[in-house]
Amino acid sequence: MSDASQDTMRDLVPGYALGALSPEETRAFEAALAASPELAAELAEYREVMGLLAHEAAGTPGPALRARLMERVRTAASPRFVSPPGAPMPPRRSITPTLVGLGLAASILMAAGLYFKTKELELRLASADSASAALSERLAGREATLDAILAPGVQLTTLTATGDQPPVVQVFWDRRQQKAVLHTFRLPPAPSGRVYQLWLMRKGATPIASRVFNTETDGHLLAENIQVPAGEPIVGFAISVEPAGGSPQPTTTPILFANAASE
Amino acid sequence: MQLLRDATDTRVMTSFPLPRAPATDTELLRRTAQGDEAALGTLYDKYAGALYGVAYRIAGERADAEEIVLDAFAQAWREAGRFQGERGSVIAWLTMICRSRALDLVRARGRRGRLVASAHAQEPEKSPAMGSGPDADTLDPEQLERNAVVRIALGELSAPQRQAVDLAYYQGLSHSEIAERLGEPLGTIKTRLRLGMQKLRDALRPYYSGQGL
Image (cartoon, rainbow over all chains, first blue to last red; front, side):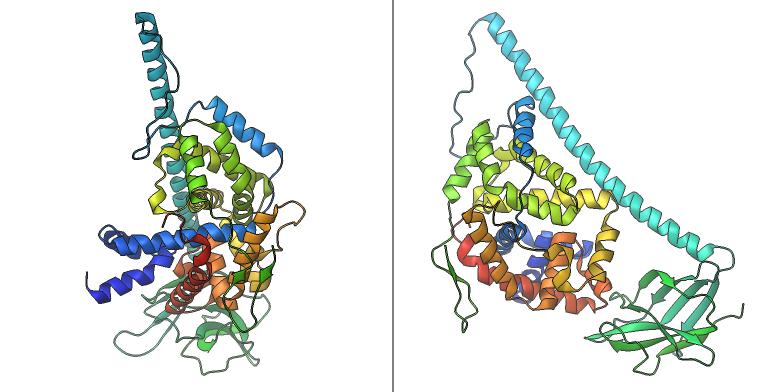
């Protein structure tokens, strides 16, 4: 790995430890990690930091929890035995060296094997359940977005500029629900310390400050549940660049503007 | 157990080093791997409070937090033999298990949106993941000292750095999710989180170095 590449990967270590990287970054980092003891050592350091951070939040669980844990491990029999290197396992029980004893031991081993196999499957199932639930949640979110966009009476206003590859912002306005969905593409992230802000333009009045947002590096963003107050004479939408946190009124000239279709 | 801090020096100092017993923890886990319930109980007594705190801040409910801690220690019981001491300390391993379980639970139950909305609506200093300190009546002196050291280290972060670390650590948000949530450029968030974590690493290194690293 080149020095520059190594530096790039080192920058990803804290994010990887926290699980904050994108899937692409995660794949790249894990590939580099497999071949770099230095990255592994650095990752171990950040995991220690995360372990220490747990003490910041320390609390006191209920007094019955310890007994529940002990009860659970008693009923779950022994843990999975994996000997640490160089650490001989002590004998756990004596087995009478008779045929009956051997048969009994074999049965115990088989039962233990089945037990651990069951627990392993349970763990895998729990993990799959969790992944499935997360996926279902995302799908439900996408469906809700589609419903919001495709609902009867939703008006689409497209804000764009001139040029070969202009940024495009679409506003899907549901007057009945008094809500809007904002979708951007080819809109580069705002400069450092700045954000984009959506404005609801009113006829003969100052604009209403709306959603503050920023885009991904690929220029995309999907923002939902934008409130559009009823009874206001909304005639269009505008986007301006504002200081972080947004502004009550535009402080810069809007970069994109479009009139909304009349009702 | 007095913590000392030189006003002209941003480094954290303590009147004596935090208890470092890597051999003890590793030994306890080795005995746990061999089916020693008492060893697991000792680890529980030592670290259940810390894990419970993390779980509670992630899940937001006491009952959930207790189940998460229970599951985390039960997993440690099952998988103690897989622990590799050369890769880190026992508390780092336990924290990873507990945090992962807590985040999985919150994601699976779709509670994440509520937590994020809650954090977004509040000032960084008041976010739910930065609540009040531990109850001095219920934590032992060692726990209180560890808590103080970590709080001082966190206090060295700028408010935006701390907020970013908090959103990633306690809510499991990715860089892009944090950027979207805070309305900041993605690159700014990446830098902020990285610098915040580096600062914590530098401040806390005296307390984990020698623990198997």
